[in-house]
Length: 211
Length: 211
DNA sequence: GTCTATACAGGGATAGAC
DNA sequence: GTCTATCCCTGTATAGAC
Image (cartoon, rainbow over all chains, first blue to last red; front, side, top):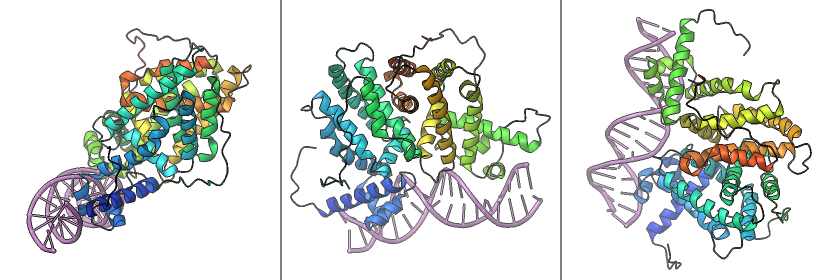
C-alpha cells in the first residue's frame, strides 16, 4: 500500500494486471453478472483455472477493479489538503465525468445493490466506503452550512450521497431524462452552495482518460 | 387491469397464484439471485419445469411479484383524487412502511439496478415506472413550490425519487446509520414543505399489513 | 510459481412423455 | 398441467504438468 517503485513487474504481476484489465473492461461493458470467469480469462489469454491461480474467486477480481478506480478518485475526495469547497467541486466534477463512463457507473450501481447482502464479498467494502465518504462530506458541509440551521451536516451528507446514487439509476435507465450534473448542482444551490462549473466543455485536451 | 370479478379461479390460476406467493415470500426473504427456480417450485409444491409451464422464465415471476406490490401502492400515489399534499404525505408514509420490509426493499434496489440493462426483462417496466412517478411528483411539486423559483418541479421530482432510492442502499448496507423517513422529511422541509407525521407510532392497530 | 485439464454441483431452460 | 430427463453454462476445487 505504500511502495511506489515499479522496478520491473514479475511475470505473475503482469498476468494479474492483464486479468484485472480484462475484468475491468468486460465488467464495464456488460456488468458483473453477465461476464463469466471464462470470458475474463479468455480475454487475458489464459484458462479460467489459470486466472483462479492469481485470484481466489471472481469477486476478488471485482474488488480489485473497484479499488483501482478508487485509487484514482481518492485524492480528489479524501485528501486532507482539500478545502471544503474543493471537495464539493471535485465531487461535482466526478459526477460530470461519470457521464462518460456508463459501464463503470452501471458496475457501481449493480454492485452496491448486490453488496447490500451482508454475506456478499464486497459488503464490508461498501459499508466502509459510505462511512468514510459520509464523514468527509459531513465535515465539508459543517463548514459550508455554518449559518444554516436546517439540514444537519450529517443529514446533508447522506442526502448528497443518496442523490448521486439514485440519479445514476434514473440516468442509466433513460439517459436523456436526467442531467446528473445539473440536478446535483441544483441540490447544492438549494443549500446555498454555488457550483462554479457550468461545464468545462472542450474536447478533453487533458489526457486523463482512464482505462 | 380492470376486471374486479373473481368468479372461481381455474386450477391453472390457482397454481400461478401459489407460484407467485412462493416467489414473493422467498425473494423477500433472501433476494432474487439467492433463490432458485427449484426453490420456488418446491415451495409451491411442483417441480421447476412445472413452474416454467406457467411463466416463461424466472424473471417473469419477479415482474409479477413487483406488479402485485405496485397494485397495492398505486392508489396511494397515482390516484387523481389525491391533493398534492396527500401525494407527498403518502410517499413519506410508504418510505416509513418500507422500514418494516427490508426484503422487499432489497428486491427493488437490486432489480432497479439490474434493469438498468436495456436487455433486462424488467427494463421497460422500470423506465415506465420512473416516468410515471416523475410526472406525478412534478405536478405535485408544481403546486407546492408555487412561490419558489429554484428547483424546477421536474428537478425536485427527480431529486426526491433519487433521494429515496439512494437512501435505501445506505439503509440496507447499515440500517442504524440512516433514518430514511427523517432524511426524506428533511429534504421536503428544505423545500418549504412540512411533513405532518412525526411517526404514527403505536403497535400498528390498523390491519393493513401486506402479504 | 504458473498454468492446463478435468470434474463437480448447481443454475436456468427445453423437449417430450404422461 | 405436470412430470422426467436432459442440455449447456456457471463458479469453484483439485491434480498434476512445466
